[in-house]
Image (tube, rainbow, N blue to C red):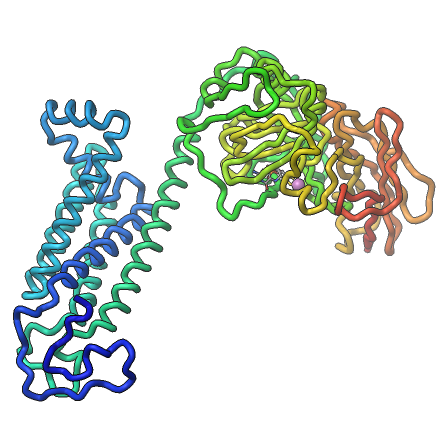
Amino acid sequence: MMRRMHPDRPGARRLGVTTTLPAPDPVAPVDRHRRPWPLAALAGLLAAAVALGVAELVAGLVGPASSPVIAVGDAAIARVPESVKAFAIRTFGEDDKVALVVGTLLVVAAYAVLVGLVGLRNRRLGVLGVLLFGAVGVLAAVTRPAGEWPDALPSLAATAAGVVALLALLAPLGDRLRTVPAAGDRAAGGLDRRRFVVTGAVALGAAAVTGGGGRLLQRRTEVTSLRDGVRLPVPSSPAAALPPGADLAAEVDGLTPLVTRNGAFYRIDTALIAPRIRPADYRLELAGMFDSPRSYTLADLLGRPDVIERDITLTCVSNEVGGALAGSARWLGVPLAAVLRENGIRPGSDQLLCRSEDGMTIGAPTRSALEVEDAMLAFGMNGEPLPVVHGFPVRMIIPGLYGYVSACKWLTRIEATTFDAVDAFWIERDWAVEGPIKIASRIDTPEMLREFPAGRRAIAGVAWAQTRGIARVEVRVDDEDWAEARLSPAIDADVWRQWVLPYDFSPGRHVLTVRATSTDGEVQTEQRASPFPAGSSGWHSVEVIAG
Ligand SMILES: Nc1nc2c(c(=O)[nH]1)N[C@H]1C(S)=C(S)[C@@H](COP(=O)(O)O)O[C@H]1N2
Ligand SMILES: [Mo]
């Protein structure tokens, strides 16, 4: 087809390689039998693709059920006789929904070809065809049981986009109003293949981008609402209630709250777009050095009798001295050791290679997973299902280890292996293989270089030494002696403790320094280390100004 150029045009066969335009023949008649019907059919298909792409994009904003393909498919289900439905289910089984969508798309494709062909002869009829198609979409969307007027928007936008795309794609195929091409002007009346190819490519790109973006948006809203529907179990081993007055942030302005709200929890991962896993699709697969590895659904995990609830402070290895990449939450999950043992984890394994939905790998030490108390597969965070950005539906938590070697989010696979056999993502990038969290303390208030009135004022912050617990926090002002701060009640060794030291500030600049001591007697080192490769160390120090 592409080589069947007008025979009256010398040089036309070499159009692809020639740089000069062929000499036009002023009296060339249009040969109706050489109208580019296949290209017109393609124009119809591409216009439909653009329309459906735009529909998906708008449906991503309005709500997935308003997508015309879904709406028309659902409407078809509602109107089809039971016997046909039974046949479809018998034939396609669980894929009946897929079959329905594919069927709908095939009908749309056939219709689009027709619209393209008709439109080549008669633009107005072509446009009418698109409008009719849009009307069916609108009707299907708004007459659904839960349909509302905004559900018409995807079909309306699709119709507009479809009309524009159809006219743009048909234009290079020749103007029906002109039966004789104007001399020297290919675009005005004749067939302009180059322009058709360019327009077609643009249409295809637009369809892919809008359609793909729309699907992403729809999955987002879909998984968010499915997450809202997850019912968390009551733990058989709940965390103790916080004693009254436990959170010193209630009395000290600017102090980090004892429990970090989910929305305020730091987020560190390599995922450009957080993976969206439908709860019903979720599987946790165990593999490698197990006697009898199995896989778990989310319901399997939620339904276990050994659900625990624990307060644990999570910390990132990239946290600078005084940094904010740490947060405390009340996690709900199942004991990791129990799951590993019931699958017969073999003694030879020293690494659990955890894999997330997006392909990220995090290598956790098997020994910690088995022996650290309260290591868990977590599905709840502060009374809610895990937020999507924090690993919905399931992540790992091992107290005392930095997140990069323990806290795999969107966890889909645990392979029991060895450190010799395989390097996880960060280890390939030369971060330390073992990642025990270093003892740390931080001054939250007063803020650095922000002037405050001289006089009595609280110096306060947080300190952590997960699995061991904080025993003491000391503060030094300028070169005075270290003074011991008051600590928030010890809730759990895995949770940070707030500390407060009221101090009488004389006017002027002061340098504040903090250091913590763990319950097993480690005094936080003054020795500075950068986060790479094994976590920062050194005392946090700030210069403050009393006015
Ligand atoms: N799938 C996945 N899990 C991950 C990461 C990641 O990049 N991908 N980052 C890890 C790191 S470095 C940290 S510190 C914690 C952070 O968890 P948060 O984002 O819930 O605070 O997640 C860990 N789990
Ligand atoms: Mo991290």
